[in-house]
Each structure stands twice: as structure tokens, then as C-alpha cells.
Amino acid sequence: MAAKHSDIACDTPLWNSAAALMARWNGCVRPRPNMQDGDLKNILEIRELGKTYDNGHRALDGVSLDVPQGSFFALLGPNGAGKSTLINILADTVRATAGAIRMFGDDLFAHRDSCKRRMGVVPQEMAFDPFFTPREVLAYTAGLFGYRAETAWIDELLERLELLQHAGKNTRQLSGGMRRRLLVAQALVHRPQLVILDEPTAGVDVELRRRLWDFMRELNAGGTTILLTTHYLDEAEELCDQVAIIDRGRLLTARPMQEMLQEIASSYLWLDYGHPLDPAAADTALHALEPRFKSDGLCLKLGAQQGGGTTFHHAYQAAVSCFGPPRDAGVRREDLEDVFLRLTQHAEESQHAAG
Image 1 (cartoon, rainbow, N blue to C red):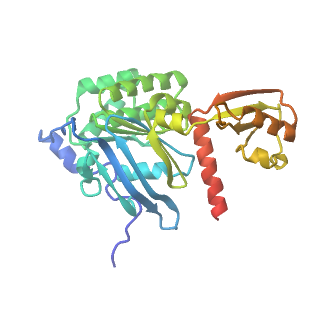
Image 2: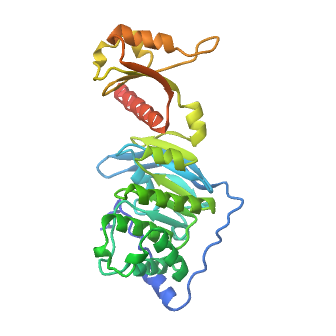
Image 3: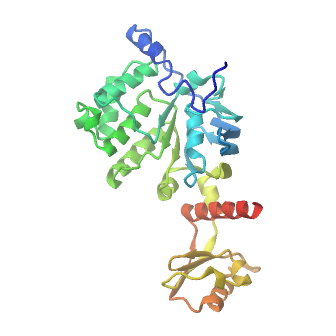
């Protein structure tokens, strides 16, 4: 009887480990790939990517997006949006059920090994041999990719990620934050062209997070493409020059960060009432302003009026007619978090209406 194909790929990130280690031990290490792809516009091209699990859950539904070479790319979405499934497909630990991916100009599904040697992934899950030291973990990982361990580069990684003084400890002696930083070093030890960071700063304190991002900026400035997933949207807005937002397995938008903030972000009126408001009290005029109810009031979308100006007065009066005068009010422009919440909330409402 034919073996059933699992959702988890049989060649996990420890792919071809025996062959790689034998090559390293025999001194017949593969040459590092050419790190310059000057004619390559997009380091990653995803077309109509789909993933449906055996239980019928559709994690990805026709996702198409491009990651430009040299970009710092934010892949955002709420929990369960499909981000980790997409990353696991790129890392070859989950198999897609539809679509195509070109990575470094090659078909990822036809050239898995060569693509993976040029990519580093920081997963959410941590798994280290508890009796290996950080230095041994990095040397071993370089061998798994078929490269000799570069002592100077390993020392730099340990220093920049503030693990140098812990380099001789067993990994079981490291704190959770230290182990997460070791994951980052592990993804960088073979000097990949594409680095995928899946929630890399979870459990990392604010000051260390800032220094980690400084290091990532330097790598990006040197030509490394970085694909980041994070729930810290303020960080994504500050760090990234490209952004894609997915929800329920579908792509909502993908474009340059500044373009999105200029073209999609809108101005809105916030009204502070000091307490939650009852959405059922909103009338038709208020609903036309796309109200978002907060714990202490609400926000109303402002549009342009003929002859210039915004609908500030109209929006203010619509709120007063429903809820009375607010304690305070003001106008501000949406940031990335505001746009993210509005797009994902709209997608949820559209899905419920269709259902």
C-alpha cells in the first residue's frame, strides 16, 4: 500500500545532514553561492499559493506577492491569518497544495536544496541539543548547510546578539530570550541572502530588541533581504520599506510601506467620552463615517469635501447627535496599526456578510 503523504515535509530543516557533514569533514565543502544577483528584481515571487490541510482547513487561499531584492519586508496578519503556514512552505517544512514560488529566480519546488542554502529562517519554535554550547550549535549548523564554520563570523554573531559571554554554556542553561537570540544567529551563520524572521523578538526585552533591530538594519543595508512577521506594528512601520497584510489566508494588500500609508491611510476624528459607547445607538449618518468604537469613545473616518477641507464638522455633529458632546476630540492620520485594524476588520465583516 502506498505511503500517505504527510503535511509535514520529509526533508525538514536538517535536510541532507549526513551528506553535508561528510562533505564538511572531508574538506569537500560546497562553495558559497554567488551573493550578488544584480539583475534579479524580486528575490521572492509567490503566485496563487494555496494550502488546504487534510481536515479541510484552508490556511492559504490564492496568495500572490513579490518581495523585492534588498527590501525589509513586513508580512502582517492577525493570529491564524496564514503567516506561519506561508513561512513554513518557504522553509520547506509544509507542502503547498496549489500555486508556485520562485526564489532567487528559481522554482522553489524544483530546486529546494539550492534555495534553502541561500535562505535563513528564524522559527517561532526553539529546539536545541541541550548539551551543545551556542558556539557548537552555530558550527554544526554551518556544516548542515555544507559550509565550513567561520570562527570570526561566529564570534561576531555571538557578540552582536550578546551571547559571547554565554558561548561556553550548554543551551539548557540559557534563558528563553538568549535561546531566541541564538535562533537568530543560527539563521545567519551561513550568510544567507534571504532571512525570514518569524516573531523573532517574542520574549526579548526592549533594549535587546532595539539592538537586534540595529543589527538587522545593518545586514539589510548590506544587501540582505529580510522578511519579517511581527505583532509589534510600530516596529514594522519603523523598520520595513515594504508591507503585505493577510487575513484568513487571503492577501488584503501588498505595496511599499510609504505608499500604503499615503494612499490607504486616512484622517479620522477621535472623540473621547471617557467610557464605552453603545454601537446600537449609532444612526445612519454615523455609520456612513465607518465608526470604530473604542473603550473610551469612537473614531470616525474623515473624507475630503468639495472645495477643500474635510468632513470634520459633519462627523462631529453626527457623533454629538447620537452620544452628546465628547470630553475631548481631535484629528489625526492613521498609522500602520490603524490601517491594519481597519483592513482586517473590514475583511471579517465582508466574510460574515458573504456567509
